[in-house]
Every structure is written in structure tokens, then in C-alpha cells.
Image (cartoon, rainbow, N blue to C red; front, side, top):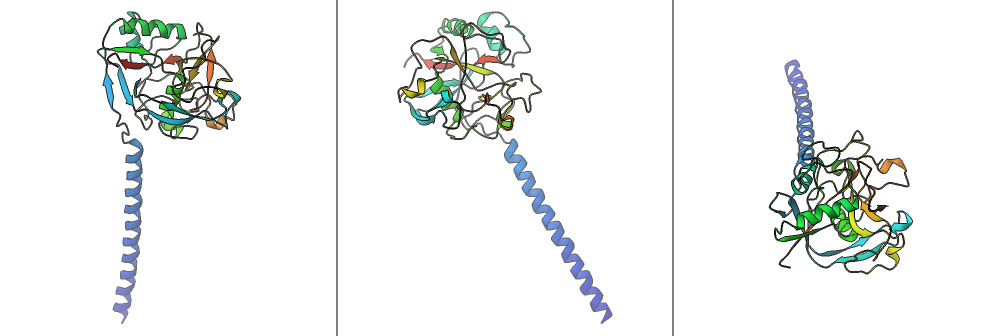
Length: 279
């Protein structure tokens, strides 16, 4: 009888050990799966390259809610906007290497070919685009409209950010308050990198705080004139969602603005649209 009791105790202990091991294996597998999900590339974008190697993502036409009822006054009212035609938007912010390839010179504060160009004015972006258009490579280049930019940034989402901010953006919470090479964090769901953070991006539109009150529902181009141009996306210097700041420019709907010849801030950059000339 004593032997049977001892065997029963051993059996119980073995079952406990096996149970603990099974729990450990399940937790390990779940952790590995979660890590693989976080680190797995989510970029399944349709990418087009121009002759100098600039990459563009093909975005389909569609509709979205532009602006925010929870944001600043110039983001209101939230309103439905239709982008009526497909378009190609830069996969990354224009880099310092691309600037040098087009302009024939380094821009201010050169850090490396894969860093976004900095210290640009809106007027500088127009000079870059004019030079690029002179190559006659089959595309006409321009800045995105403000509506195209927000449509691309949201990538089908309706929240403040297109995903978890720390996965998408270099901002004050993770950037060490300095610019980073393009494309090192996750893209959004449409394959675009650094739409939130890193450098804030000039768009084509003039700025008008009240524009959303009477803007067209299809392909808005912005006011016909103005004194300042719009910037979007925030930068590595912006504080992020936990700051309680009223100037939180990283949000998808957030609008910033400055005069066209002002570019003394290191967080000013841009990305561009490519339009096939056969269209």
C-alpha cells in the first residue's frame, strides 16, 4: 500500500510539472507570435519608382472624413471628402540624397542620403519640383493637396492616428529630439512611412482657418490665395498624445501653417505626388 501511495504522489507531481510546462510553452508561443506580428513587415503597397529611384505608392480613389470635431477650430467641421482619381504619393519624405540628385547640391544640415531633407521653405519645394519636372521622365510632380495628404495619412482609419504612434512616428517620446532616416519605423496600412512625425511636411494648399466651412466635397484644392501655406504630420520635436498640448501636430487631422519663404526650422520637409503624363 505504501508503494501505491508513493506512486500516486509521484503521478500527481508529474502532472503538475507537465501542466506548468504546458502553460510555459503556450505563453512562449503566444509571446513569439506577438513579437512576430509586431515586427513583421506590413507593407504590401504597390510601389512605383521613377528613373532616379524615388519610390511612390499607388493610392486608389476614395472618400473619407476630413478634419476632426475633437481638434482645434481650424479642423472643424469634420466633413466628407472624395478623392476622385488614383494618385502616386511619395513612399518616404524627400531625402537629402534625392535633393542632391535633383538640385546638384547638398541642402543645409546634411546628415546622410537617407535622412529627410530639412530646413526647406515652401518656395524651396517648388524649386525642387520644377527641376524634377525638367527631366521629362514621364511624370509631372507636385506637392499633395491637403486633402490628398490627410486621406493618405489616415489610410482608411478614423482615429487620431493611423496606428499606435510609437510604431509609426519619430516624435519627442522616442526620437531623442532629432531627425531619423526615412522608413525605419512601420508604414501605415497603405505602405507610407513617416506620415506622422520625423519632419513636418509642406502641402500645396494656402492656409485658411475657416476653409472647411465651405470647401468642396470632391478634390478640394485649398483657397485660391493666402499668406501662409499648410504643413502636416508633425515632427520629431512634437510632444505626442500624452502631452495634453493644444499644439499636438502629430494627429492625422492637425493643421500647421507658415509663410512660403520661412524655412529656418529643422523639422520642415516634404513629400511629393507623381502624376503620369499620359493621363
